[in-house]
Length: 279
Image 1 (cartoon, rainbow, N blue to C red):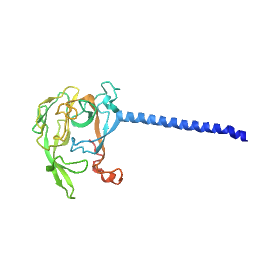
Image 2: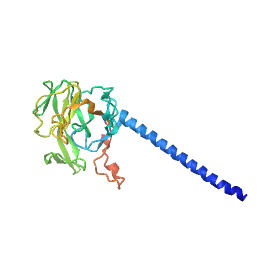
Image 3: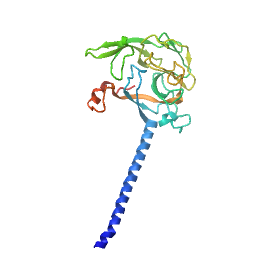
């Protein structure tokens, strides 16, 4: 009996070792499959993006989180994580529509994600005249509507003190002059016009083939195609190859007041009314 026990011990250890190695292999296979799935999902179907600036007010606030569809404009290296050079040029290419809110890699370095609205397509002539947008020498209708009102928070500081008001609850609010623009294709959206800015009157820009003219809805606080491509500043007229995807859904928004150590603030900081908005 004792001899049998001595022989069985190594066999049991070997069996447990083999089972552990098998579990490890299965886990690694699972992680590999998961990584491939996430890579395919983010590269070719849908990817999340967050909003770090106020250049797209009033539509987008700092702290908004979006889902961006990757298929509408086709695919290029910029569709892939880290812009991996695995796709030559652009495949399944499709031209954006005026009014689309699109994510793209910003010139000149093509390494930072920007989000702006498509204003001009190839062949279009774009100009600003005293704050009025002109496309192909025709004014885009611009109608004054009710002010945009947004509460001040860690994610929202008023552009200038002259826009600050005290709300009914005693909290500070930003009241911004808001307008509705309607593009030639019928697409309407809101823009802000905060002051007489340097880009309210521009030269005429002719959009080359294979490019798009991008502008922020916050016209006096957006470094966009009205400015030459320069790192950390303007982006010039954007090659369509740089397009990453089209914004389709707002999935979350926070005013920035939450603390990771105080779980209840995760709920009080959320802007619930902004979740589920489409584009």
